[in-house]
Image 1 (tube, helix red, strand yellow):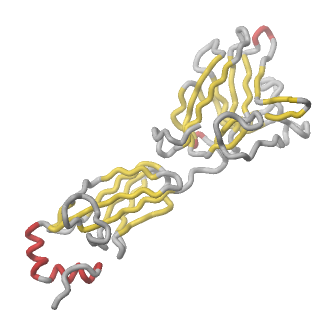
Image 2: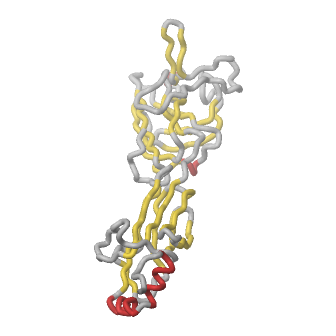
Amino acid sequence: MTNEDDSYPEYPWKYTYTFSHDGDGAALSHLVIEVSDNFTTDDIAGLTGMGLDSIKLHKTGSGNPNMPENFYGIKFNPVGDGQTSLTWSFYSNRVPVWGDFFAKDGKTGGVNNVAYNYNNTDGVETGFLDPNGNNDVRDDPDPTAPPSSGSVDYHILRPDTQQLLDGSLRIIKFRDDDRDGQENYGVEPRLEGWMFLVEGPDNYSETWTTDADGVAERTDLAPGEYTVTEINLPDGWVLTTDNGLVRVVTAGGVTEAYFGNIPEPGTLLVLAAGGGLALLRRRRGYGVRRP
């Protein structure tokens, strides 16, 4: 599992699994990985290496013989016949926690061959268990340890109930006096009342306006890719930075977009006459103090 692959910004956790066995001719029929019971197809993207069969409550029985107890999960099918070793990946917007898996072959030779996470050392059982012996009551204890590489008590990492955290996007608007496209903080004034069109996932589209500190910010955005475009540019002003900036908002993170503007030379002459400087002073307290 990794959160460093940004192929799907709205699904920041990439889960990769490998399953293999040495059984002669016992090709995999299907494999189920535990997920929470509110997990849907909207919570998974970019599946490769396996086919997605269903996301539901999977029950013990002829389809899942010897499975310790019923559990909710993603059922994967091999994309080809006769496979005994597979690696597959998918992306999810659900954070990783420890859980279980169950796999079954195609009943080679009339015998069901199954595999699931389990261990018994000196009579101490760990892994996928059914403590009360009732398949219908989910009481298998899963570890609560933080996610890590490998396994904890013979469990695997799987997507959890918790959905993606919101992210923040902050727009900073400044007067780029030296025209270098970079804010000289504390020297170049920030500008109030400038408007931006922000577009992002799920048809998000809103107009933001900078406040008295020259900032427009939202802290409750869905993670993903956003495009920020300065609109309603006042006459006589030009951008010193690119417009239509693309920024990726991450879960729990703060992403910034800087926009610099400067009056055109003709506008500077008007400002020097006084009126424009008075406007700037009223809006931000910057400018030349009148004698």
